[in-house]
Length: 199
Image (cartoon, rainbow, N blue to C red):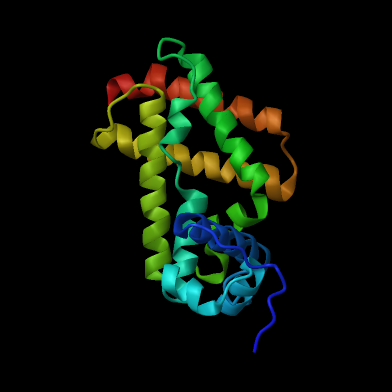
């Protein structure tokens, strides 16, 4: 017979799933894929291991969801931007949003972007590529440009620059947040003004 320690609370399914995912984001970010079990996630979330499997399937499927969540720019990020006619403010705001997210979840974000010990896995690579595609679409939407072939490829390249620059800031500490913000905002505005029109 188990004793109720009071740690488990009755939550709606969506809230419980989010709670489990939040714990998984933290643990995979701190330890990497190989050092985390679904039992660890269940224990951290105060749920039975079977519930983790119910919501996410296998450990790998849970990890893929963690990578997806950490790297995919949500559409809601666009709703908080300044008006469409203020492009410099919009570009600065989308960069600020990105920097806020990666700094707030730096360990987990870095773990996700480097595939946390799962680099080269086809499924992880696919999820990362999908997240980059979504981020490119969101960047183009933020600056009010259509996501056609050439522009989309350029936006994907910009996402690569943003990722690399954020890693420089978070891992090496050679750049300040202000420098990163200025670099990414100025680059985005240059793309919109000088590169996208020719695409």
